[in-house]
Length: 371
Image (cartoon, rainbow, N blue to C red; front, side, top):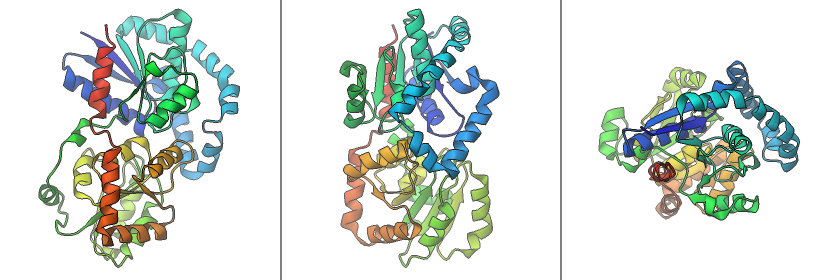
C-alpha cells in the first residue's frame, strides 16, 4: 500500500482545506492508498501551535497592515534564514522518527513552513522521498523556494514566472490550479437548492463570505446591501465566526430583504450554484471555488500580502471587481444586477481562469511521482 503524507499548518483556513481536497482526490483516484494529513506545526511543535494560530489570526483580523509590511520581504526572509535553519535542525530527529515509523512514498506540502522543513531534511540527509509543493495562492512568496523541492504546483503562468525568477527550474513547475474539492465539478439545479435551503427561487441572490474564519466587515456589508433599491436576497456563510452567526440570528428580523445565514458548511458548492454574485475576501481556496462556479465576484478588504497578490492577478484578468467600502460594494452589486452584459462579462472571465478539476489533476501528478 502506497503511503502519502500531506502536510499543512493550522486547523483553520485554506492550507488545511487544500490538504483535505488533495486527500479526497487521491482516494477517489485510488481507494487503496493510505493518505495522512498532518498539521506540521501541531505535530512538530504542539506546545506553541495554539499560540501561533492565535497570534496569526489576531494580526490579520486587527493589524493587517503589519502583516503586509512583513509579508514576502526579501530582507526579512534573508534575516530569518538562520532562525529557519535552527528550527529545521531541531526538527530533524522528530522528522526522521516520523519517516521510520510511517515509511512515506511521497510528501506533499500545502504551506511553506512544513515544505521548508522537509526540503532541508532532504538536502541534509540526501533523502530521496519526493516532495511536492502545492502553492495555494496566485503568487508564491519567497519562503517556498528550496532546491530540494521536486515539484511545484501553481495556479497561473504568473506564479510560474515568479518561481523561475527566484531560481526554480522550469521543468519542476506544473500549472494545475489551486486544489478545490472535485465536488465543484458537479452542478446543483437551482430549484433543488432553493427547495433544500428555503431560498426564493425567483429572486436574484448575493452571497457574502469571509473565508473559513468569517473575517471582514460582513455585518456592515450585509446592512449596506439591505439598503439597496435593487431586488435580491442575501445569503451569508459565517464560517467558524460564532459571534457573526449570533449577530445574524439576533438581527435577522431587522432586514428588509430576505436574509439567510449559515455557520461553517460543507455544501458551499451548492450555494454557489444558486448565487448570482459573491462578496468575499480573496483567499486562494474561496476565490478559486467562486471562479469555478462562474460567479460575478466582488472582493473586499484583501489581507495585505497573499490576498492582495491574488486580487491584483485576477483584476488584470477582469475576473473580479474590487470594492473595500460597504457603500461601494452596494453600488457595484446594483450595477451588476441591472446590467446583464456586465454581469455576463465577469461570469465568463471567472470561468475562463478557473481550474475546477485542479485537485484531480494534482492527484494524478502525485501518483505519477510515486515509484
